[in-house]
Image (cartoon, rainbow, N blue to C red):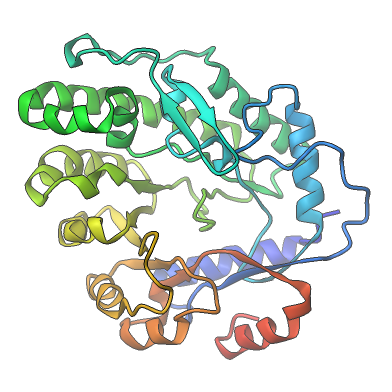
Length: 360
């Protein structure tokens, strides 16, 4: 069974409350060790993944049971907590909620429209019977039934609004649309943003009674929040970002308790100054992107975010850059690491490192 007590849950909540207030005096450092005896046989069905997310023969009950086995094999230390992820349905699953086909392989999931329509013929509507929305709802319901709220069920990767639109329009076409039909683009952005929030609230409703909320970032939220994004933004300049992306981010982040933004790769760094003027974005997750060596120093980025009084999520695990980041940010409370797993063989080493930062 999952080894996580009510006292541990209270500790997670207390530490995050103090961290948001700047009173914890240290970063949030969640770690789990895998290799613990789960105390039961492993179910026959596979763990939810990109490769099998579309296999409707696997029931929601089986998906949750397999995840229960996985979480039962973890030991939770630092600021970690039991978390079931549903990001395996792919980045931008809202596109599938809106009628796009879900395609997958062993590495990722992507979405393709049944046809690429002209902008003026595109309209998005809520479909209560959508197969993928229904699938995720059923998993949420089954998870809440199984764990009674004592495992946080992470939101799926709903996607950035422009990214979702690009799934239907295709990125190259959408880039031309910004010049040729800007008002149509804005209309569709607003349509998608409102539906995005409707899906989000619907999933929140299913999680009532949970110990909290999270998403693919593994950040703990006591109240509903989310890691926002716009990967499409790396292809556009500052003026277009401020015209087409920023207004929606302001609107969506204002609807959330502590919204974050996923800053993905060097191509998006040009938008950081603009993002830091959005008061309702409380934190920035910086991911250097593929091809960037883990040894590269991003002190200037972390320092800028901290100086703007925003929280920071650093993507790398405890083996990289923790001391360097703490040296350049203004407060240790500004930093949260992603929840990473380590072999239980490294327990003494990792626990000693956590103890150094006061997060044992």
